[in-house]
Amino acid sequence: MTATSVKNEAKRLIENLPDTASWDDLMYEIYVKQKIDDVIKAADVGRVLTHDEVRKRFAMQCTPDPRLK
Image 1: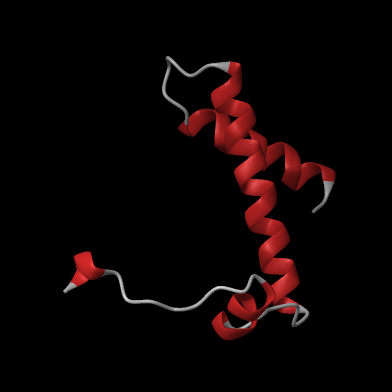
Image 2: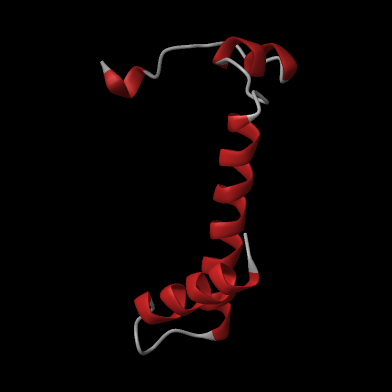
């Protein structure tokens, strides 16, 4: 992202915050935006895993949630 587009995106984030927003609210919005951008870039270059691969890496088993029946 260029410096100009970062500045414009920061302005957009600030303008979308409520008038009562805190510095923490702003920092959170910036953090989330950065993480989303990172994930999109990773997906664009093929750095993705299937659900099964994630489960294997974390030794998770897929068990149905009884509340969803």
